Amino acid sequence: MISVTVGNVEYEYEDGTTIYEIAKDFKNYYDNDIILAVCNDKLCELSRVLTDNSKIRFITTANHVGNECYRRSVAFMMLKAFYKIADKSSFDKISIEYSVSKGFYCKVTGNIQINKTFLSKLKKEMDALVKRDILITKETVSTTKAIQKFKRYGMEDKVRLLRYRRASSVNVYKMEGFEDYFYGYMAYSTGILKYYELIPYDEGFVLQLPVRSEPKKVPEFLPNNKVAMALKESAKWAEMLGVSTIGQVNDKITDGTINNIMMVQEALQEKNIADIASDIASRKDVKIVMIAGPSSSGKTSFCHRLSIQLMAQGLKPHPISTDNYFVNREDTPIDADGKPDYEVLETVDVELFNRQMSELLEGKRVELPQFDFVDGKREYKGDFLQLGPDDVLVIEGIHCLNDKMSYNLPNENKYRICVSALTSLNVDEHNRISTSDLRLLRRIVRDVRTRGASAETTIEMWKRVRRGEEKYIFPFQDSADAVFNSAMVYELSVIKVYAEPALFSVPEGTDEYLEAKRLLKFLDYVLALPKEHVPSNSILSEFVGGSVFPV
Image (cartoon, rainbow, N blue to C red; front, top):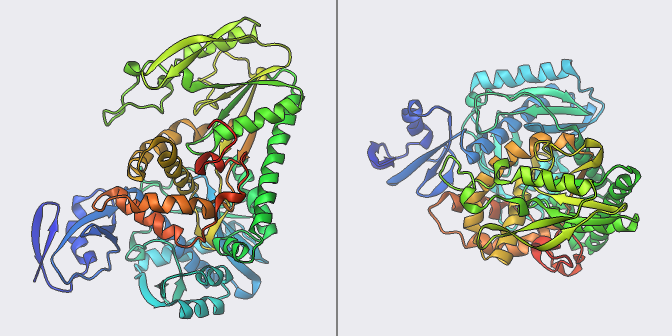
């Protein structure tokens, strides 16, 4: 017999009991399905066999890690069903490309017609797998054997990825004979994977999945088409240059051609910024450029680069941060956890902002405020501004796409820009890279370098940042006149150099440690790249250092 502690209570179980069997005894204590566990401070799957006394904490689908596991497991089930019903001679591969709405955009190359009839057949097969509650098993094989397996299956992206695998072994997941390799843990079986929809979209389909706040409900399909098109454009560019996956980027690093990719990527971003500036200049009524985007999307560097391009168009840009319109710190709203909530619109003195911007549009001379972040108060230090015929305000802040932020300003005078790090790079054809993960790594590196904040602190506050983004940024993205994608296919290789030491510093025994370990495992796929060849005006320099701009 072994002792198993769940919560603060000890229970006796037979030696060799799986965590899944223990989870069945506790499932009625949870509102949502148990999908993973933390055993002796280490995240693990429910299939783990216990042979020693253990302390267990269950992870449900309402947890961030649990929700990601659920989504990954449904994707595996979808692939299993797809390979069963599809004629293998009629397609080259199916790939999970990027996020659309709350799901994954899936693309099929070949002669298969992806329509409602096909998706209905695919869903029927997936439903059958759920009903039969098929085990998802894991086999550890040598890296050499795994490469041979996936070469036989025609999964060349995995073959390329595993060539850079440092470990001598690989975990291969199986579902009734279908095998695949995944970055991250899986559900115990298909029985709990009940909530999903398949929706035709663009050239493929979206596997729509629940979010952690409502893990038993498939959300309404509400794609941000402008964001999706920006992602599609980036994915097409990456495919054209042969850098759609980490393995392909690693190839460019090892063969010495990565500098060409870096220069082309930076040139493409500069062209996009120049095109936006040209569009603004062509709209003679535009006097206010409103820029918003989620945390660590590179808004500050973008504002500076856009201002340069606006000057090249004969305009005189004046950058303004809405942070200078923060209410005094003692008036900051409090969130549900009793902490200051800097994400809500009420953090900003909206009335003052609208009054001053309206006065500027009327040609009046206005003294702009500056927020002192040390004292937590708004101050006036003689920063006066009066607009001339060629002047344009470049305003940056998380609420800039929300009409409530600029309710008193005429729409014809506004030009809205959404800036986001929409990575089109994937681990391989079936393992996508979350744009949130990319931004979190950026934020960790910048916080350590410029604010002396630990990776643990940044990871801890990230969930509150994400909550604010879901409420105050993402719903307004499609209202933008332009979407700028700040992600670069090569940046993870540079970020890795600075992120790994920070992540290794996170102490064990916390949720932040589990997240740090997950990110470290992810970065293990990536070859490191020194920052020497990163241009000083690059958005990446805002995070890793060396920027020519005051960021």
